[in-house]
Amino acid sequence: MNPKKIAEALIYHIERIDCMRYPVRAHPSTLKRPFYGLTILLNDPIAKFNPNLKMKIDLFFKIYKSKLYDGYYRSIERKQKFKETSVITLMIIALFIIIFFLNIYFPNLGVVVIFPPLIIISFFIAKFLHYEFEKAGNHVAPLIDPEIKETVQELINYLKRFFKENNIDPSNYPLHLRHNDYEGLRYEKRGKNKYIAYVVVE
Image (cartoon, rainbow, N blue to C red; front, side, top):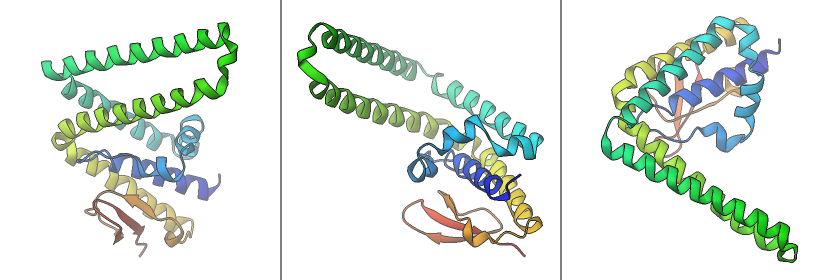
């Protein structure tokens, strides 16, 4: 088992869970390596290296999402917003279908005419859904922040032991975090709620 890939996967999960603490923000790794999350989803090296740890991570996300959605849809106002979002989504899907058939029956319109609007619309859909997720997360995250922090700290402690046991230099594996209240890390501030952190191996 490649220690480098395991370390990278651990860091990915740490960053992913840390960004779920209040205020909820986009996962830093999605900006650094857009498709890395898909790689982890398809083949997480931790699943083979430590199945129990992998199960614990998956269980955390299951519980978190359950609490997130329960809190989000609890109020009538937010349920109404969900309905509005569903209507907008259906309208956009209908638009895609119309454009698709227009392209079949009027091929002279060409790909150049059709694809730019699709790209623009997709961008605004992504922005809208991300905004809704942040709003939902910021509604619930403060209530379960201690649980999220505890999970991150546990993974950091595991990463620290992993570095020490495999004689890995932590300086080659920086963590991009939104919070600076974890033990065992050295922080460098890089903006509002943005930190580069390094594991301190004693």
